Length: 608
Image (cartoon, rainbow, N blue to C red; front, side, top):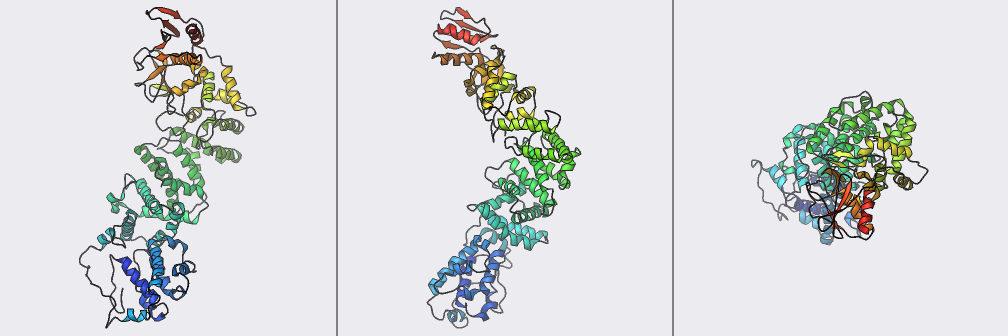
C-alpha cells in the first residue's frame, strides 16, 4: 500500500493480501475523513468494476459499519452500489472480508493508531523487488491471479484481449473495458448463472471463428495469435453486446446469439450468430427498421441449406459478409434478383419470389410471415407457394392443409401418411443408389431426404394428396380411406408397404431406404445395403404368415448378391419376376403363384 509522497507501486501478485490490508485500513479509519486522499491511492488498474467499487467504498466507509449489522448488507443496500457488481469475484471477496474484519477487529482499541505508527513501530514491513527492468510484468499477470494461482482461461483471454485493444489504440477502449466488467457481465450472468464466464468466453470464440482467426471455437485460446485480432472484432463485440443489453425485448436476436454459445452449437448456429453481429456492425449497434427482414431472410436460407461441413459453413459466412452492404435493404435486393451464393439455390430462388410478393402485396406478405413460423419447415414454404403460381388464396388453402399434416418435428400420422402417398403414386426420392420413403426429421443434412424435402419438391403425388384432403374431416380417417380405395396392383412393391405397415419397422427410421437388388425391391435395414437386407415380397409374406400364427424364418444369407429364401413348414419359398415359388424338402417345386394377389395366394397354400 502506498504512503504519502511515495512513488506509485504496481503489484503483479498478492492482490488479495493487499486488498485485505486495504480493507482493514478502511475499517480502522472509517471515521477519519483526513485519510480519504491517502486511501484513494489504493486502486485497481485491471478491473474497472473493482476500481469503482473501492473508490465509492472509501468515500462512504463511515456509513457501512453500523452496530448490529453486517457491512456487506449495508453496502448492498446502499444507493451507490451497482447490483451487477455482486458478480465480480473481487467484490464478492471484499464483502466477505469486511464482515470478517468487523468481527475480528471490532473490539481492538486504538486500531487506527496502531496502523498509523509507521516511523517508530511500523506494523507492517515489505520486501521490495524492483521489476522495472525484468520485463516480466505481463507474463506474471497472465500466469497468476489474486490468490497466486493460475488464471482461468477466460481471465487470461480477457487480459490479453484488453492488451491487444490498447495496442490498436481504439477510441472506445475505456467504454469497452467498463462494459466488459459491468453491463456485459450482467447480461451473461442473467442467461447462464452457473457457467456465465464460460459462456462469455465462448462468445468471443464464436466471434473469432466466424472471423477466420481460429479454426475451432473449443479449446482455442492457447494457440490464438492475438495480433490477428483487428478493430472489427472489437466493434462486433461492442455493438452486439450493447444492443443485447439495451434491447431486452429483442428476444429473437438474443436467442440467435446464445444458441451459438451452447455446448451443442452447430455450424448453422454460428452462421446465424454471424448474421446478427454483421448487421449490428454495419448499423452501429441500432436497428434502423430493417433488422427483422435481414434476419428473416438469412434464417430461411441458413435453416434450409446444408451446412454440416466446415467448407459449407465458411461459404455461408463469406456470403453474409458479402451481403452486408445491403443490410438496410436486403428485401429489395432479393426482389431484384440480387446475387448470392453459399446457400441452397432452391431456397435462394424461393426468397427472391417471396421478396417480390412481400413488396407488392401486404396482405399476401402477412400470410407468408405466418406460414414461415411453422417449425417443421423453418421458413421454407414453397410446398404451397409453387402449387398454383403464387396465388394468395390457393397458397393459404394448401398451406393450411400442410400445417394440419405436420407438427413441430414430424408428421402427425407418419407411416399412415407414407402409405397414403404410396396409394397415390411412387413418391420416393433418390439417395445414392437407393430410394427413400423420406424420413421424419427435417434436419436431414446430406444423409437422407425428409418429408420436408418431398413436399418442397411440389411433386404430382403431393399435390394429389393435398387436393383430396378436406380440413373439415378427420385427417387420419381420410388417409385410411385413400389407402382403402387404392387401385395399386397387388404385384406392385408399393402394395406390400400399404398392406403391411409393420414393414416400415424393418428399416432404420433415420433412412427408410429401399433398393432394387436381383431385379427385386429390397428393404435396407440400415444406411447401406452391404449388411442385412430383406426381399420386400418375402418380408410381406412373412408378416402375413405371422398374422396367421405361422412361424417362418429367412435364410442366413441376407447380403447384396444372393437369392433370398423364406423357410416355413419344411418348405423353401423364393420370389422372382412377380411370382412366389415353393419348394419341398426333395427340392421339388410344389407351388407357383399365378393370381394377381401372390402374397395371399401363397399364404393360403402354406396354411393348408
